[in-house]
Length: 174
Image 1: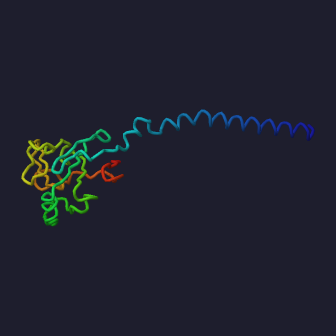
Image 2: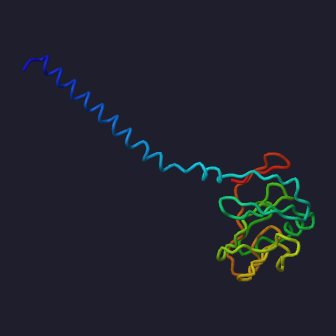
Image 3: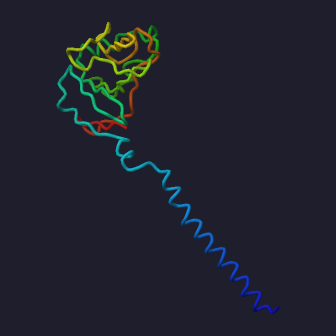
């Protein structure tokens, strides 16, 4: 065997290996890409809400990631009531200041932390529980004006989703 035929054989081995590697990459790339979230899922990852039409003292419910989110435009009395609570007596110790970006706006996921029910209290005609916030009639959990658990079987406060104010009248949830 000559050096020329050995060089040719090495070239064929390397060319075959390169084509094989490219073929494997072309076959695996769609499988890896299929693990990325779908575009409709990414669209649900965040939502923008115009809060300019929510009067003081009223609420709005929007859907985010398939969950209800309560947006409450709190009155000065509701803010004062939430701030005067002694945090040490709460089952889930969290101050009102830790739960809001702007005191007049409370944004929480509207799912009871006991068994996943949706508490009432969004409408002015709803029962608001013993603490003028939200009430879960299924098992009797009472939430205050900062959506903190005050009475009943729920172990945690209503969750605060990640959100930010894009402007004075628009928030982005997620």
